[in-house]
Image (cartoon, rainbow, N blue to C red; front, side, top):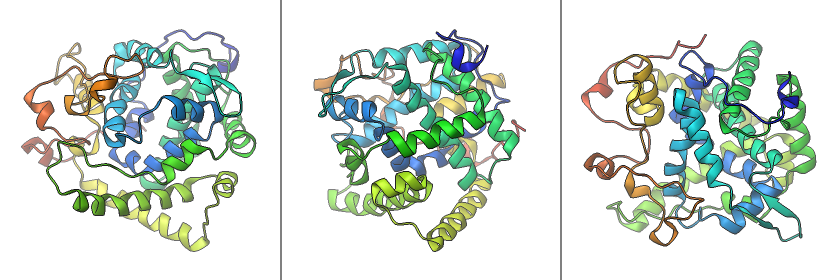
Length: 342
């Protein structure tokens, strides 16, 4: 039975530490594609409409992304609990529905819409690996495609939209980029996004703004380089051969720099905990790592079914970092696990 004809998904077997998806998805370098994935997701009309009507990303972008990444990572790294995490994410989307400005009805659980979001995470891995981790062979791309199907089953969604092969997926992606994606308000909001200073950051706002403005500009430049030609043309972005050379050079520098980055910094906390469970360093049934409580939704939004609410409220949570950091002595040892997936 092929992926696209399988009908309603069954949970299947979760991904493990020998998968290429484990190797790449929890890597800090995926964060450099933040503008790319935010924009490419929102260009899908139904998804963009849902963001415009229901999201508070512009109000608290750093907190929103920081907390949402935890369950998203969990569908890959939670092992026997991955399907439960997938069902949790699916539940967040039940009430996200409505009618867009063109009179088109949308629902976040429309199989085509839900799969598009998953497809962008899959392509996030492909592009991160190709540009910033040394590249992928054709065999590795096919392996990652098979793993992305296995990963998608964890959501319990219909498998009808899923292409049958890597080649079919490439045709699917090209068709979506050329024929269906559009530049809407949600996409433009990503291109011009400003990162408001969170309340818990003890730094003058002007200093904060000066730190983040070039970072967002750099991510926009990376996004322009990673967009397909059709998408770049729709967005009105310019990309020259010189830009491509610079991006490839920058990617090689990043690849070399990360050789010395320990797992405690390189990996997302949910991924790091998964490797430790797999190695027997912590119990297999240890509580899953949740987002720090200080990135919880605003008080007026807590309790709404569309929001993931971090549950841990320990001192470590309150003092922890927003990104993949554990600056302990353990962080000084050499990184491991880089060759787990051949």
